[in-house]
Image 1 (cartoon, one colour):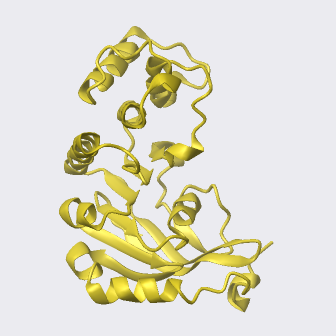
Image 2 (tube, rainbow, N blue to C red; image 1 turned 45 degrees about the horizontal axis):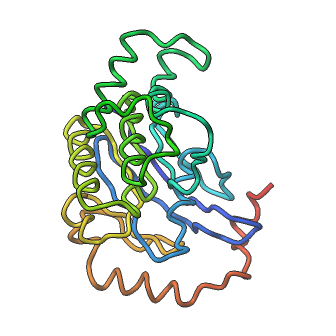
Length: 250
């Protein structure tokens, strides 16, 4: 089982303007947590800070010794270049890089696992197709198949169900719940509150600052959601981060 992921007074800034401000809390091992909040609340920025893709201005992220190679990440689809001439099968096999190495030979067993992963997400026989020819829902299924090969202890997803059909969403939610039952830690940025209430036991609400973090029924109270919305209406995008964080910015 993976270690706890601890955030301690975490502040992340763009051009000295705080996007995430003094967030503290713990993603427990095997937890399944939704991150929600208004547009511009810092949800994706928080994920990038967790992954080390965005430097922190102050505070820390402690993975408890777990290497980032044990983390599977699905970014927003808009961040992925689908013009590169990759087949569906090769895209899925990128999830096996830990076993094969960056330039290692892909074994027959890995290819069989790739085909099985595609079949499990409803894309049996899609291996030879170019990824550029897929619909949004089909491509999202491919990315989940790639995560299956990665066998990550922690799975981080940024808006995994945006702009896809209801059937694909239901199938992929079922896959997330299966991973949760395997005691993997799952963290996902979501916008659909009904999805959060129905499928995610834990919720973190952020509006640049932490609003609530805990059991979903408590965290997703009307009071907390209204507070997040009210804070978003008072954001000052030209105000610099506080002096405490300033001292930690290089």
